[in-house]
Amino acid sequence: MKEHLKTQLAGFFISVTLINVAMFVLGIMLQPDYRFGYEAFAYPLIYGVIGSVPGLVMYSKKELTVWQTLIREFIQMVLIVALIIAFMFGRFHITREYVPQIIGVSLSVMIIYVLVHVFSWLMDLKTASKMTEDLKAFQAKASGEK
Amino acid sequence: MEITVKTIGGTEKEYIEIGCHRKDERVDEIIRFIRSREGILKGTKEDRQYNIPLPDILYIEAVDEKTFIYLEKDCYESGRRLYEFESALISRNFARISKSVIVNLMKINSIKPSLNGRFSCVLTNGEQVIISRKYVPDIKERLKGGSV
Image: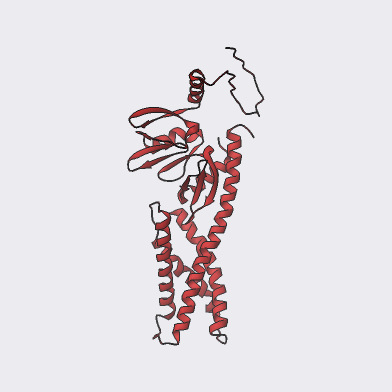
């Protein structure tokens, strides 16, 4: 569980950064004249937390296979999209005007979700390469080569 | 048969060389004896019991209350539990990498990232075994510390 929390926390910080970028890009495209107060600084954090909740719920003690993991990841992504849409648009009566915004937000969430995984994978790639380096040193030492 | 023992420097790798006209049963017996000194495990295959030298083992896996010992090409069953192997082999370059697998660290070619914060060990025979998230910090520490 501790390791799962660490992974979720790293995902949270990457998400917050990417949500900032997405808000900037979507804002420029859809509502360039809209002005925010200081509360705007809290939105990426709130969205980051919302995005992390399904990840905590989806924790499994079992060792999942690659397919089980992929299916879980997909379900998690759909849950995050649903939660963010509900949080952003739940209080409004949905009309046609909202459809482009809902599609834009959904696509952004999906892109962010994929990017979070890409960045995490790149970090893991670096870790794996360091572990392989340490492994080779360990094997050399164990076989007496030094 | 002449026997020569040569003392070598502490930094050099220890070795045993056998000079023979041909590799027959007698030589195989000597090899088996030397390998048994490195440690052996007992495993069964098709109702026959075998002595498996530790350096030949790739990994040991527990599946449905049974324990299997995997070599490059063969697989043997053992009556021992995984935790028993873990405590017996920790000082022999073996490490627990998930709830069900103990791997021979000397048989890993490389480590690569897998999904969901896990890592995958590519073994010398091309097979891959997963290091689960829980065991990643221990493996990192073990490899970094170089405790042999």
